[in-house]
Length: 610
Image (tube, rainbow, N blue to C red; front, top):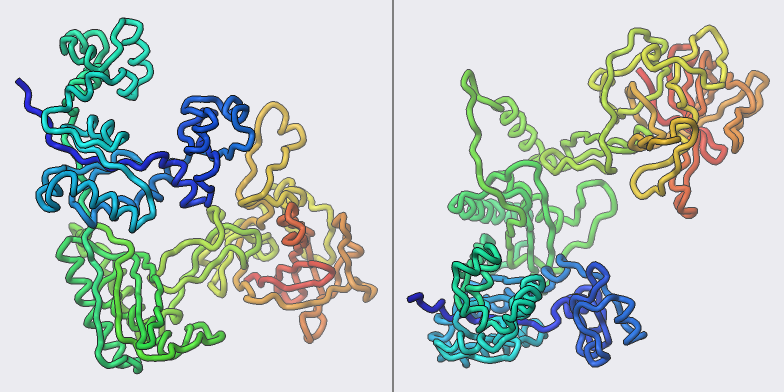
């Protein structure tokens, strides 16, 4: 003889996908609204049901019954996000809550009923608290087992102990939520859950398989598994209240050190480490300040203290650390400081190597650079992160040491190639891997001879050799792909019968990289041999071979070799953001090689080759 399952208390929010659309997207749930998945209705509002719409209808049939119907796509993520506050409100009253699906959660009924004075009192308390906290209507059902409690919640009933089998016996087999099995049972003459539960369990398993055996247990009032309640997250936040408002940076640094040590000890007690740190402060006038610091590795106690001190220094002194406009200083001193570990993960210690300490040099360098940051500020030590982009300046982002090394633009950086063998051709080859002020030896270059020989269609003057250009380099950059760009059809013979994938960031200049990338391009003038300005037409025709270059207010310099243009047509699908320019590489008589760009008739010097 099997024992009855434990009593379960289930909270059900009717038409939850519709309510989630109202909470997240602002769709009024009081209007006729349906939620569609695979062109069929999975949920509908009360007004939609009044118009004759039911679950399972096709979209066209539902719109035929109600022309003013509002259609919303099914989004399980939206439903789950909107249901989280409801679960949190239930956890404020009872402990050990399991989410069945967005819109329904369950807990054991024994604890709440004993603490709140009975099952009926517990149900009323939970429904009232959810309504006050989240403004959401809900119903509670209590029965022996989760399945029966879910059916009872739809009617707002509390079944007496031992009354679950009788309650389930008269329910149709469609209540199992298995349409294929319900259809088969009806064709076999089994129409209610009581008829299905009366069948021998062995015969059900042999005829309907494992899923049928689970459905048979549910029909008999026996759950298939115990509750899998979720554990409430541990509160790792540390807070410090100060009677005297903190207005000096040295006092703030002392408070930051003490609070950082408390946070680090609390994290260590649970075997956790922090990667994102939220810093919150409240002033004496009630002003609330909040910032989130992200770290590439694990934040130690000293690193936490440094970042709190930097942030408090920025707030109290009104300094943003970048030399720009200073933000407004708080109107009063800080009376409350709070540290919130926004991102935590399991702490894993450093594994020493067999023949030495693995990463010891890295740790020493990290401590030294962090010390410099602690003295001069976080922006004093920066590292370059390579990413996507077409020009050398776009492909580099400088981030403070220890921060997350995320590129400014999506897309992998170009792969480095072998060093060049010819100095002249290496100086004039296009670049792709930029280095803002860094030596070009860190970024291997590719010789012109290894790029594949093809003429760019533009000659050169002087004895310098014309650098080789990759086949099709003059045409490929015109296609301005990249994130968000509409796809363009591949033309030519290669596009027939097969798809030619576009490379990431088409139009970027191939290796090697320039030695110096100017933070701000310098204006310049380019003239031909007769002294007339060199112009590039809309069809990329150069008016005359460039002969002299004048950078800023400097003296003119003779151009001994040049190659180009390489056009870039960016964001052509957005007229307000469209940008079109052409790039050249020139070699001066003194051996200097430059990367030039012309945009709107203005010549600019973007980078200098070594």
